[in-house]
Length: 313
Image (cartoon, rainbow, N blue to C red; front, side, top):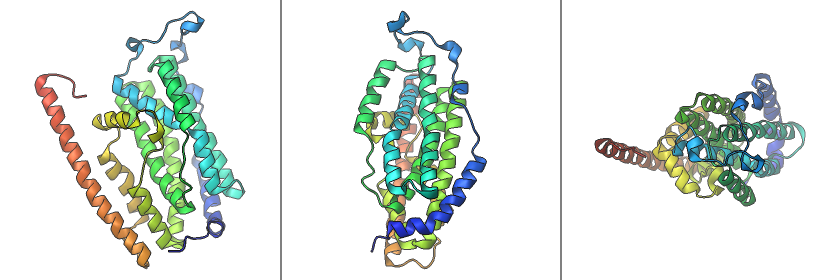
């Protein structure tokens, strides 16, 4: 398959980008990060004569702390994400306007989540800062994805991030954390809609190449936070708690987008597109099986823990 020329694609999609940029600006509501932080709870740490952090000061469980850290550290890598998306979309015209608007909106997320965590002493600030340094020094590298692959990936990634934030908020059992992360997840959803609509338009312009890109990004998908220290262990804890697991990824991230794009109903695909669609179908069948097995094992583990009268996680 010949890779579509990105310059031509960007030109053909310029009108779609501008239309969706204007739609986004019309529906996105202004909000202030400082309004979601309980500043009256704040107090000095040891350097200024206050108290060092202690786990007893946190009102959320260890797994909730892990999820909050993962969500924040994922947001912290924004400079790398900006570099990668600007490389793919450029800085001119509606494309460039979107890149900078998206970056500005994403920047609020790390600001308010960190302020909330430090003011409420929900997590260890020393460990958090060390992980931030390590995560940002690792950076994020998209591997020079082609334009269509970038659009497919960020569609899935924004929806996945939205659910991770929203479910983390619920899991904390802290109304303030839930309100904050619900607000953040609303931004993520609007970003997903923007990218989702670009994929829709691309399926009309380059159906075979776009189908190939969708399949590749579903099969190879990794959360952007994969560079976080001990990410596999942290992600496993979040999965066991039901914050973000294979079942959520399959049912609530991948399939809603595939249904929206009508990937299994598209007609007129060439050999490349049909082959990609067959690969996608086979992968989804296997992923569904894996998700079901994971849910069954988790339920069995919870049942054993309940029988012993101990916490499941």
